[in-house]
Length: 165
Image 1 (spheres, helix red, strand yellow):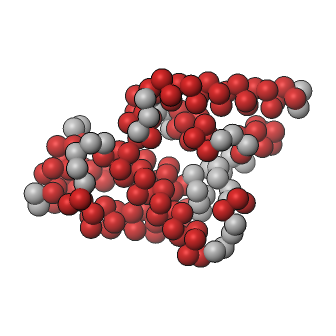
Image 2: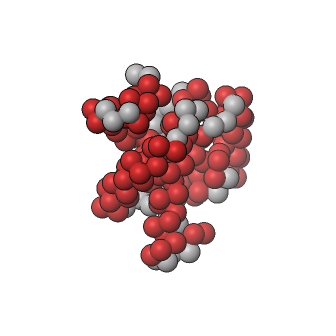
């Protein structure tokens, strides 16, 4: 689906285009929020907030990279929620999805990646996104996505080797 065309249709008042946009982007929005707040009930509320913001701001969007734009809105919505609630210090946020079946050392190692490395790694491994799609979402060159993925794997390997796993 050509997302940019659907966005233009929606900007012109075609409400069916919004349904297509929603279905095409809801997994991305969920991931952006879940990476900051792994609480299903809150995620649903923040997803709604994100789409309300998108609806209000769609007139400002200039056709460049809708996935990146919407990912940024979702991520900022999650961060705004955390700031408003002041439930936790941003440094102590559980930034990973529920990984109960994951080995504790791997979980520990992933938590200590740089944020961009973690995002790229999790988008590639958990979501199965291609380098091209990740580069569009994060507004990075594909070579940078590959570099961050390589660095994440290298750091994870080193961390796990230190623990002799």
